[in-house]
Image (tube, rainbow, N blue to C red):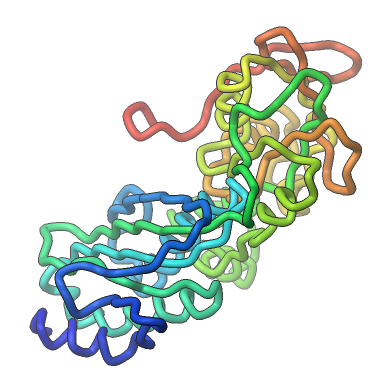
Length: 311
């Protein structure tokens, strides 16, 4: 497909902006920003690193979109505008309309508008997404540096299913029925974000600190503790998990290693001095170390998980 034809098709399918704002079709977008706070996040996703080679790009873009929106969610905001750049191999150019359809579906579902971007021919497939989000009027964002000694540590929901889905997509033997494997592969791109849960936490006035679990529970907790100059104690038996994990990892040590390292779960990890009705998995301490507590004994938990340059 030729670039101009694709761009014209893109313009036709995106609803026009209102009140004089300008999106795709000119050299840059033009938007009004009244007196409010803006959140900006940018993420890149490449074939072979963030999604498998030969994985349908129309599914990969859905996953990339939600992963980017998760960063806005983690700071208590809502997404408003999207700028999307795609690098597509020539042999995949026939998929452009399907990729666009998938992206528009996600934008409609989460109420975002595409206002610009670029589409280029590339030696490998990749997506770069920039999302602009807004915060409720007069509110400051949830920060990694907001944890305080005495805070409880919470998760927005169970973790582990995405870790299993990644193993299923990569073809690892999980000793599960074929039907369950297919469900996990579908979950890889069709998972639901806890969105706009971040905004709910912010508006509650009871939470000041949050991060989304993108690289692993242990390393993302470490990032909170490092930025907040504190430590933590985690009670592993209280970590909410998916049922299949107990069967796949009957050995407790292997199970905990998996749970602390599984990334791209996109649940929110947050702290609060209040007792909240969410899974409470630990507490913040003054000493700048992270421990797990089992049977009344403390053991140091070293941060580990995904790292682009060491994993």
